[in-house]
Image 1: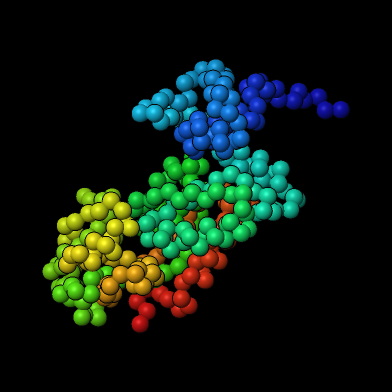
Image 2 (image 1 turned 180 degrees about the vertical axis):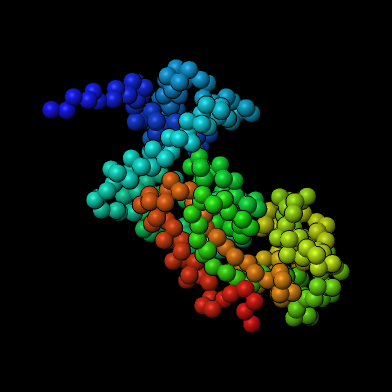
Length: 321
């Protein structure tokens, strides 16, 4: 007979799975109210669970700053380790079980750059409503490159955007490649042109988004050493403002062609080809390695991949004629 003493796991015995899931939800939502709604509990019940966690770990876990829960260093460290364990346990429990999206519930958090949200948000929500009606999809803004902590902590299930560089530890997939174009009002002085030259770039006034202010951009990197530059002299806080701004000014901005074409039925805009060095727009989907084998995450990624393949015209690629 085996003589080894089984591990005692005293802290796990003092904790319940419900308590761990409550902590995981609080780390995602940073809100007692949102966690109560997500776990179908009352706010006082969540507050009691939080008090039990604080007593068990001998740490505040969260401090309240401007009415928001901000995790302590202990909470951040614990959650980083716990997420992988929970994902592994979920995978083990689900092995051999049929996967049914229609039975799923909860919130899917997708980090999306403004361009990709405009393209994917409505179609993806429609698909999820049909196939997994109990799921809530929540798009979160990604400004420039995503924050690795958002994926490591589980605050985002995945992120989609025009990411310049990705940490090696994150799995990723290129959803599609498109041609980046210049967008201007039909009354812009250069609107009759079909294509801009490198010299045109310096003569134009360019619109960008606030998160780009003071940062090196893909354009800076692409034009480095060429003797040319783009002058960004206006910044707006929301991508949705861009077509309205362009209609009332002589500014230009850039975006993937598939996004720009969505504006054309509603705004009197013109699309101009950019110099070849600036044309490539590569949209990437990235997720945490701990979610690589999660069946929900796999299904979500496959759904987005299939949706993108149907939304992007066949043969569309950077520099396409």
